[in-house]
Length: 424
Image (cartoon, rainbow, N blue to C red; front, side):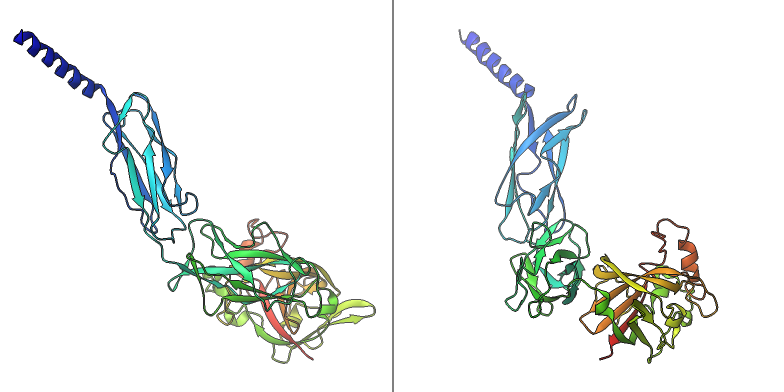
């Protein structure tokens, strides 16, 4: 009898041992991870044995952290390839500026498997230091539609987020223009949108109406746990200039400065002689006037090299507005190059495209203009075919479709920029 009891117990034990061997398990490798403040984390699961064919193991997500805001998951399931016994997913931090945030992942155990040691893993998030945000420029002119820009800093270094970010602002009480009457924001979000890996964040405004005394918009950055506003550049003033016509250009403009004196260095073109770049005389005066019922340019007051481009009496038409990179290439202008500014597109009936005192190639041309306030004029020569300077860049671009768009191979990096002030 005792022998039969012993054999029965032995059989039961043997059966239990066999069951344990037959139960395949899946488990997180660790019950606890830490998500670094600025680096991705790999989370791994391990099976008790390799699989014969691909196995998909989903999981549920919990915790106090907000997915797709404070972090992003590379997948919502582990995929174990045939012949393998493990798989990983990655977690990337984003707006992890809040303290005591954590993520929990819990495995959905597939049929035919049991839970291993760690069915769940907890992942506390390291807190990212708040970024400093400031306006790229603090003064803007709104003709029809344009952008205002901000940039981010981490400490003293510029910061380009690896994720989309939204930065709040408010309309300062010192504004005189009324939202919805004189201007509006373009798009659904009244926040600065900072696309991943972009240099700046922007918000777009549209002019609705220009009214004397109600033409000033002031935007102020709002601080929160994610963004600290710069003490120096936390406000931007946008003046509603309204649609620009030739009447806004009429008058005499005295030369102030040439802003493209470093253009020769762009792209390493150091073989260009800076002395060959166009020069203006301090007494140069450019005039826009009405002559014989036509809107024309008067170049009789030009002594410097601009007289080699503009032709006296050429008609000027104001066409529309657009946006361009500024490409000043000069430390004298404290402005972020990556911020597009609104420009006025004009057409001159005649210019000398060769921009030369000895070579003539007369044809019509596009010229971009910016009015900065009421008393400063920026002339941006975007269409020219130089024979005395920047010849190598022009020759390399004129037959390259990448650069020669709309017949303007020098537009952009080699735009020639001149500033004038109004003579009152």
